[in-house]
Amino acid sequence: MVGLDRADDAGVYRISDDLALIQTVDFFTPIVDDPYWFGQIAAANALSDIYAMGGEPKTAMNLVGFPLKEMDLSILRRILEGGIDKMKEAGVVLIGGHSVEDSELKYGLSVTGFVHPDRVLTKGGIRAGDVLILTKPLGTGVINTAIKADMAPPELVDRITRLMAELNRDAARVMADFPVHACTDITGFGLLGHLAEMLTGTGFGFVLRAADVPILPEAIEYAGYGLMPAGAFKNKEFRQSAVESAPGIDPLMVDLFFDPQTSGGLLICIGAKHADQLLERLMENGVSQSCIVGEVVSEPREKIRII
Image 1 (cartoon, rainbow, N blue to C red):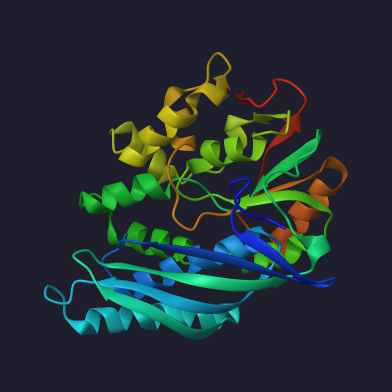
Image 2 (tube, rainbow, N blue to C red):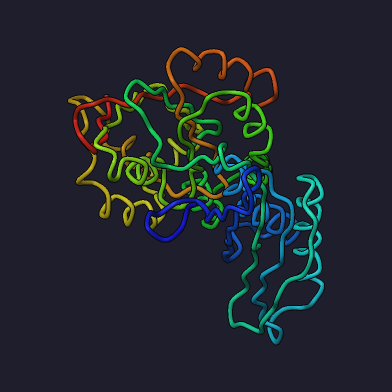
């Protein structure tokens, strides 16, 4: 049902009239120093693709690259404990995995989920008049850069770590009760990069209201110091031709919209008449930083206009 013909968050294979499998894989190098929390974040990030497709993750397999000669196995043990605890939180069963000796530490998951074939969500299902709802604030890429530079206080490190380790499960469960047209999760390509992916081949455009986009205040501060991750500039170089900014939009904010996120929130596209109710339900179910950030428009075609 969903394969290689279009970039999406996961693949989907129909098993029967009322069951389809969702399959995804994701792993990366450490972004925090604590191995247990790295395991939590990596697992949450991998599971997020299943939620973005409208499904429920069911099983997972560990993927590990470990520098056995440079690191003690106790570090790997803590990483795996973090991943297992996050999988238990999500109701996911770990059924196996694979590890290799590597010069650089890596961890993630291959995940399988279930979804009804009629409930599959993809990036390309947007419709004119849809409203965009974002469920987590932006800025983790910038703040992780500040953490690496030893510029972030412990309280901020703890808060950002917990934000990245937070599952998108509750948002996905609320979303399942509404006629959502499209969805994705905001990760390495940044908000604008993932918006551009959603537009490809649709003939529609997005209007993004800069003042409504939730951004961690510390990220704005650090970005002002020049602490933008290299990935933000790569994202901008790749997708800037799809972006138009209205006069008066701060270029720094545009850069932040390209900031690569780790285990970011869901970006949900839904008809305007249901948007306020969905937002209210998200708030009631603990997804308290959700915001309406823009809408789908007929013009400009396959462009993102920031106002």
